[in-house]
View 1: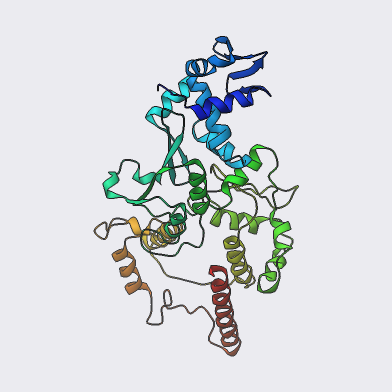
View 2: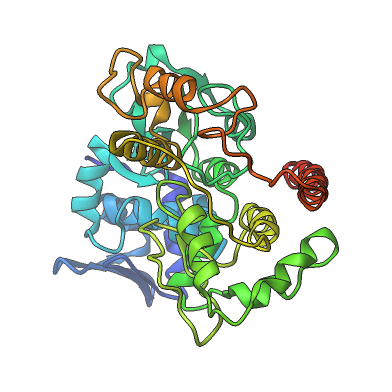
Length: 392
């Protein structure tokens, strides 16, 4: 890319040279009545003050690059670092980086696809869209130019369902932001994935403040205080189950950094996300509250009559729902155990009119059982109230 220096950029370099410039392989300083300009490529030029314009033109890529990062890019440390990461500024020398920016440098941030470009004065512009729309014709995407629009885009998935967890891998497709400036780009990203840029930067700086499971649940109160009672002398196995259920890459794009406590790691992988998760989120705590109550039930032995294939089918149905594959199973694919018609056939064959598997009721038919059932119903209503509060 053939960079061009404008007068404002020359004036800025001349002024900053008084204190010395050393940035991205470019150096400038005053010397008597003139200036010394140099690059890490081995070039050096000493010029009189009146010749600074011509000299700056000879160092156009470096001058415009310096100007962008010090006069146009946001100066907040986390935003500045994120924008440099986007164009691999710490990995590429300026001339090579400008060549790449001419074609567009693309990075992924969760389900976001961000492409950075630079014009001939070094100003960066950014294209933001869903990763699944990488090859989509721009004419087929809804154009946006206000970063605030990102708030609406994140509310619902492609099926119109509300997304309570912003970092779930369910971001809707079919949109794009084009020509965003650096500040607007980071603002849009932060609306899609709140606090991820700041936490990513803190982690890079070794300053990520992690709140582990025990720290977090010990702070819970009110209807969520019950989660504090879940340690029953069985170590952290139950927290492993929570993390496996909620904190997998298939469920959340963050990389879990919190553990059971400061000294005790969980036995579940934290995922591969680009940005870290520093504490159990409200969705995890809300789910854990429900599981805390469910795990308080005593185990019972039930006797069912199933064929081996039916047992495997039930296992496959649970797996398909847990992994989010059920919507992808075609109605015509009756070979799949989790196929809807296969499931309906199993229900018709093995469930009674009250919905009991193999006709076996959940509660025994006695007074104690009826009382237990009433308690379960009360807990369910309570949980509905908690779920509504969490969603709100």
